[in-house]
Every structure is written in structure tokens, then in C-alpha cells.
Image 1 (cartoon, helix red, strand yellow):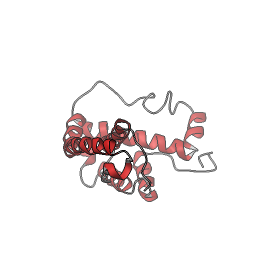
Image 2 (tube, rainbow, N blue to C red):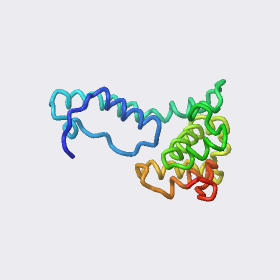
Image 3 (tube, rainbow, N blue to C red):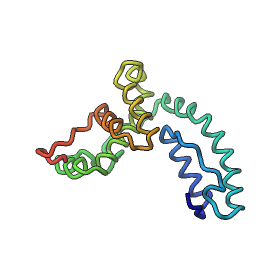
Image 4 (cartoon, rainbow, N blue to C red):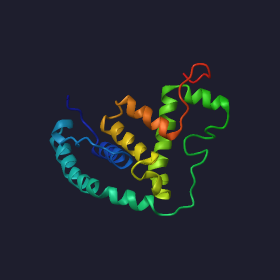
Length: 169
């Protein structure tokens, strides 16, 4: 891997985002692996210790927040403005791989961060929620490369299948 000068804050926050929002399974790189500047590499490694401590406990925060009642609802603004408003929107967005991925990821985020806490019984062993979590874990561990897991996620979330006759290719 070629060394590149990185902004410590820009990249540490990016890794934090991945860690918090997903089942991040990859080890964080050491500063010397990604930074040319020794001072920046040292700072990265110092901050990495804090991030690793945070990472070891974030599951507790996830679980607590999943069980705190809120007055929010998953509505037409949580994916894009007026998502699923009409057939034209669905064909335009769900008919493209990027659009399908964005919608799938939004629905998956809802399922994990709101649905799991609101209806934990749907995520118990043998239930569709548990199958969704397993597919999400498999997909995440593969860094998004496991297409079967991605398809399973879409199926458990109820995304319509691709169908050229409807324009969903």
C-alpha cells in the first residue's frame, strides 16, 4: 500500500463513522502504514488508542440507544426527499444499482437502529430480523463484496426484485 499523507482528523472520523454505522471487521491501519510524515503517524497512533477503546464499548451505546423511545419515525425524508412518492421515483431510483444500494442501506440502518430496539422479538433466533442481522454481518465482513448477502438483505427488507419488464433492471 503506498503511503499517502492523510489528515488525521479527516480519516479518523471516517473510520469512526464506519465503525459506528456498521459491523466494522477490519483492523485500523497503523500510522506508519498510511502517513509519510512521522509526526502525523505518531498522532494517528495516539488517537487510534482512544478510537479502539471507544470501539470496544460502542456496542453498549448501540444497544442502549436502540431501546430509548423517541418521537421520530422513518418517513419520506429518511432516504431522500419524497422517497417512494410515486412510480417514476421508484423506477428512476430502484432501477439503478446505486439507487438500490442507497435505499437498501437506509432501510437496513432503520432496521438496526430503530426496528431492533422497537420490536426486539422480530430479531430473535429464527425470526426474519435475526436472518437480516446475519446477512448484514456477512455483507459487512466481506466489505460489501458478498453479493448473496446483499441480495438477502434486500429480500428481508422487502425491496422489489429487479425486473426488466417493470423497468427495475
